[in-house]
Image (cartoon, rainbow over all chains, first blue to last red):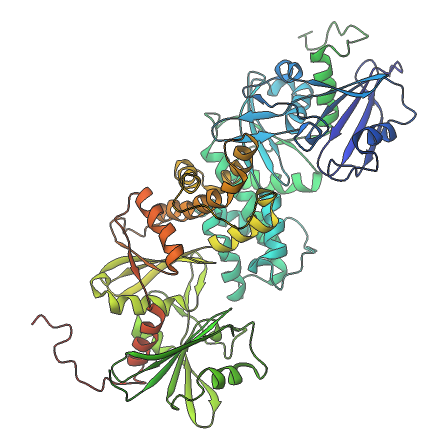
Length: 318
Length: 318
């Protein structure tokens, strides 16, 4: 570890803020997290949040990714279009005057014209994942499960296309506000994986027309006594995650054999591992720390940092 | 009109109660409506609601359809299985002891085993529509738009299969609680039809993978300035109604040439007329008063009423 610190990276989303301090080799030497998403800022707003989360750290260059660059963020950084890679993303960065004594750069998100789609933050995680798994640069699909799950296709090191499926948000809406969640405890105490989750996957897979045509099955199966109310959450989870895979098979951008890589919370990734097997995929690789790695890679691509130690043999066949 | 009244019919759903008084020929001679759905009963419950809504009417036999026969209703009447027709539905009726001096019968809903599905009330509307449009007995698809839209295939006078799409409920959830409705007025003051609705239909039609893969487009198009916030409600309406037609084309139960018949609120049916044309269907027939007609037909099939006047020539080729 090289204690000559060179960079602070911020993964600044809607609901949380993570800060990373890097040494000159790109190793994370310290990290902090606060619930200061762009909708939950402390008094004093963005500048105060930055000051507080980096308190006591050296005054080095800062690079940020995520919703901090959105219209509701610190500075709206225009999207760049797909296909995109680390250099083109880095080139789209914009400078914010955070204070007189330090530079802060926000990287852009990615826009896709047809079908219309946007991401902010996930592009940085994919850049980080590619740095960790360079063998996937040629051709892979990166799956980022969550509120708005992203499925991004990478070819020759570039993000060429992606889909967004509002899985997490729709799941929460159905459980909390719909007839399907009525009389059902949102607390899911079932062990995982279980039959209800697999039944949901099966309904998604067998449905030529997609999950919208099967959502009401959760109600019908419950009324028929074939689905216990306590199993409804896992059934819906399986149905909606299965829907992502059904969509993915139909929209593989000519990459049906591309390996899957998962970037996300371990408990959520567990569900996607089971779904991937059910839909006939080889076990996806699960990638951690992608945002921290991606911020460093984008700083490198932007020339905000340089490698202190020449990595003469990195990536070589030696 | 024959003022010798013979029957009271109740269309008793989750949110409203409609009562019809029939003469001996099956003409509706009076009707009333109250917001006394099974979840909004007046004090005294079902019996009081019945008493109040039929107050001053003769004490004749009562037939009821809808959620009144569900587990949360007056009496749970077991579903009958598809395929089903008026005689088999009528045969599944069960008697409720409403009071000492009158008979009340509740008809069953329909269950489909695979994919799992249930309906209560719509089967009665379809029976009524078939009585009004006997030329559609051979082969037609009946579309009942709403909170839980139903698409039922009729062959040889029998309901053979159906789908439920939670269009109305999902639309309301998205507008009220999701990111897609954030900053968007739920009041839609646009004239109809409009470009945003058609753009929604186009997104559904062009999407091989279905509306789940395009929901987030509403957000992306809005952020791109291609969709005005005031257009989001119509875009989502078009996307979700278009999804019903996309599903319908994939699940036509071997009846791709069957004519469509619409049963529902006129303003909602207008949207389905536009969508039907967009998806290449001949203009659907719009059928009104289907529930009132269906209740009479089921009472006839059950032998609860008999035609006072012999209709010697009805249905004959004379």
